[in-house]
Length: 197
Image 1 (cartoon, rainbow, N blue to C red):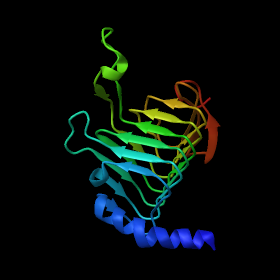
Image 2 (image 1 turned 90 degrees about the vertical axis):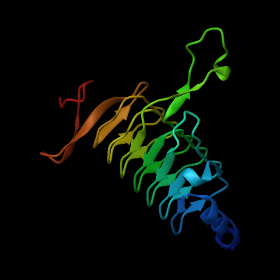
Image 3 (image 1 turned 180 degrees about the vertical axis):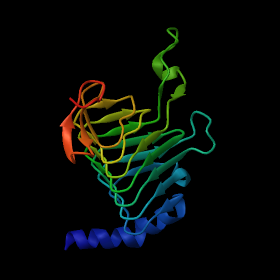
């Protein structure tokens, strides 16, 4: 009963506010106690679920007037996730994101030894594209890199280089350990360069 009341309250009060403030919000999309900054630059598809204490931001801190954060239909984002776009982050459809995942297309500069890092400018990295059907495990960190369609990133991995479609990557920095072989139609182990063993 309590869940039904919460759902009703969300669709009566919060959803209409998000509909006005966000660049787009699709039907049956829910943000559960999530913090949102840069509303008009954020585009959410249908049936997106952003769980408790999530934080989604799109702020043009590096000068990109067209900065966007796009999350595709049916994507699930776990608790305490932090997604921070300053130019472009695009998360595809039906992506599964576990708890405490960090995704960013920027980082702090740290080159000037005369200034604390907090006083140095934000530096733009590459756009982040997460392909349809990908799975990001708990505590994954993605900075300025993309993850291919239906790829899996293991828990605690740090992704700073692109991971192609149909791969499993683990570690810090993340390395590919398996790829889906489309000829044998099976997952197959790979060497450190992603070539089949």
